[in-house]
Length: 203
Image (cartoon, rainbow, N blue to C red):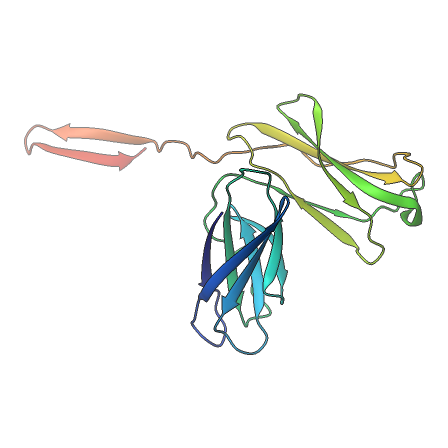
């Protein structure tokens, strides 16, 4: 796991000065040290994808054995800082899946035991990528996917599962194509034999 830190604006122009990490099974806890004073907001990213904000100096990342990832934290005193608009450059593509707690009449909110998150690639089989326990104090949930294949089409769905293991109403997100490699630019090249000059211009 590589790590990097930046200051995201605020009262001081001082970046995060140090990181430390501790691993517990497949959970890696990264702790950042900042020289900023007062109330500090930490915005956390994994492979360039925003995963959450805290006033705590640590964030727990779930990484499988042997998985390498790039962790980045932005520290700021600015409570209005937008962590998505100001996200750092991306690395391997990932997607953050967000949803609101279930109000399904099949698996009512108080009866939901957990949420099953599934992913589909290029119209293939649905694969379970996460099981998130219900938390009665949480209104919104999120899951960060693993690395996604460039130029593939993905879809995701979230299903509330009741205490009796009965599925509630499934939320299916619109499919999207992951494009991490930009298209080559269109341009024209002309040669002027009188001046021996070549001109390159956008098409």
